Image (cartoon, rainbow, N blue to C red; front, side, top):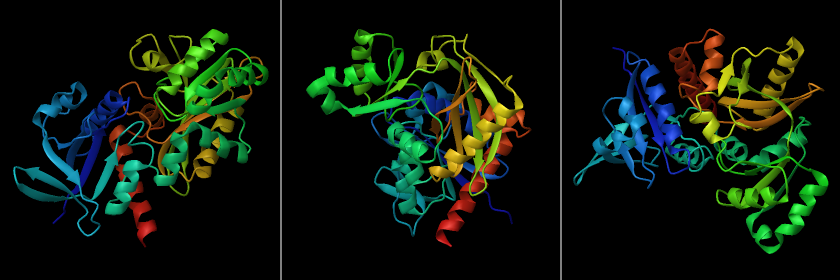
Amino acid sequence: MYRKKTVAVIFGGQSSEHEVSRNSATMMLRELDKEKYQVLPVGITKKGEWLIYNGPADHVATGEWEKYGTPACLSPDASKKALLKIVNSSVKEIPVDVAIPVLHGAWGEDGTIQGLLELAQIPYVGCGVLSSAVSMDKVYTKMIAKQSRIPQAPYLWTEKHELNKNADRFMNQVEKKLGYPCFVKPSNAGSSVGISKAKNRAQLKDALALAAQYDKKIIVEQAIEGREFECAVLGNDEPQTSGVGEVLAAAEFYDYDAKYNNSDSRTVIPADIPEDKLREMQRIAARIFRAVDGSGLARVDFFMEKDTDKIYFNELNTMPGFTTISMYPMLWEEAGISKTELMDRLIELALARDTGIRG
């Protein structure tokens, strides 16, 4: 008799991207094939509480799911490979075949939950501990890209304690080496949270202070005037790359509000670009994915400079959004892979990666 695999979809989390994670999970819960999988939604509140949820997927997006959750935790005991459901004073073990940590940002996309799942020896969708951690940290991603000779915008970085000691010295360096306009970002944050565009020293000072609220490391990049593109990656040892989509931001740049709250922002799939530029972005996407030891999936973002058409790598996202406006699933749909099939492939890749590690 065929036994359905139990798939734990872990969502929410304590990061600033909690709501985005809930929206991504909602789509995944709808698209997972219920004939193949026993789907187990597991939410993490903003306070860090773990709750097993059994109810409509729509309540995940709205946040109502918390009212119906049952306390739970993931056992790190590798002999159990289970979630522990806590009802009053009793504990019930729920064996898990594979987990989907659809968590964006800190405490989820940065290697932390991946490490917990490794301890529990539960296969999971997405990149491992190392690749999740270095890809979440923009400074380290840029170091790896530089070592791999991947073109990227000139940048400088500093730490919050250095800014507190002498912000003027760092701003002088930015003005000398990068100039204006420039982008200021927290090194560890996603969904464009805490990012600002600075056009003068006063704006730079404010932008550094904002970025420092989200991370102890701050990165400043020279602004590339041009177009923004995204490419999806799928696979383990032999990753596939999708076509390329273009981001048309309603705001001056694709910040959090432009991405999720402004209906005038839109994406164009496939992007209207020359074939050689498409191939170049696909090559770079696969190259940076391998360089960070990626597995499962990632979305790689690019700039194409105005006038020169030069391609610059921007960043790599190891758990891209799966919301209704997210580019990652749309790029694969354009390639003929439905969302349901995409979920199947991601689960197969998680199991294949796990077999390779444990074998």
